[in-house]
Length: 94
Image (cartoon, rainbow, N blue to C red; front, top):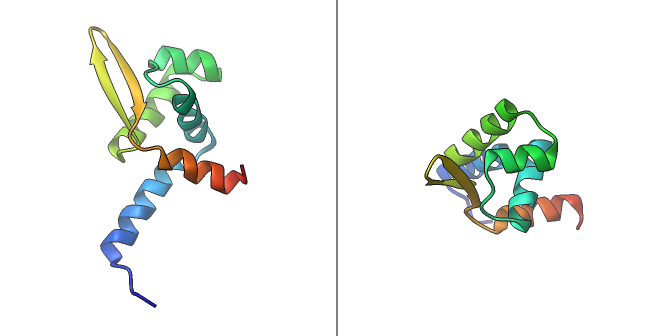
């Protein structure tokens, strides 16, 4: 069996932790369907508090799961990779 570098495994675990929360999974699935949503849009769609959505988006941005593009006063969020959706779909058996 080929040995996988510890650094690679740690990076993968770091990213997976960034996905492993029901609200973060919902955000990922929502951004798959509708890229370029603001915090306000995500709050309204998921019936979640602004501070909670912002907190999770910050962590997801730090882990490279989403990017935020500023346009004037607003920030609009996009997934960085379709594979995050694929991971969720695989785990959910979709």
